[in-house]
Image (cartoon, rainbow, N blue to C red; front, side, top):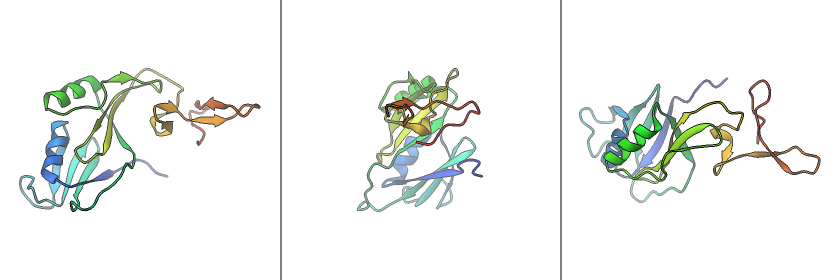
Amino acid sequence: MIESISAITLATHDMARSVRFYTALGFEPIQTSVPGPIPVDASFTSLRAGTSYLNLTLQPSGRNWTWWGRVIFYVSDVDALHATAIQNGLRPDTAPRDAPWAERYFHLTDPDGHELSFAKPIGSSKAAPPAMQRHGRACALVTSSENKPQPTAAKEDGRYPAC
């Protein structure tokens, strides 16, 4: 059984710029492909993300990527991190807000176009968790006799149906 995500690796065209961006958000660099301070020419850098890791890998400027998804990081204080991002010259895509799936969050895009979300669970909700949401709405299952989509809710055992 899968227990957790150890790390996620994101591509970058500019290692120094990416490391500055992520350290401004509080990520701690712990390893690079070159010993010492983060050099401009490092090909790989690992940053601590709680008990997991965010890895950055340098890619040639000719290699491009398109939208692939979003990484969601849980943080202790969404509003404080949003303020820190702004104080460090970053431009979040959204202001902090409360979501129907019982999280407070904001979105931020990194310099290489990777979408990030910083969130914290709030209150209690039987709404679908973030992994089951599509474009800010809970996914829906066809469960009614009229074949109308019904909002997905947790079963009594706390599990969610696939969608």
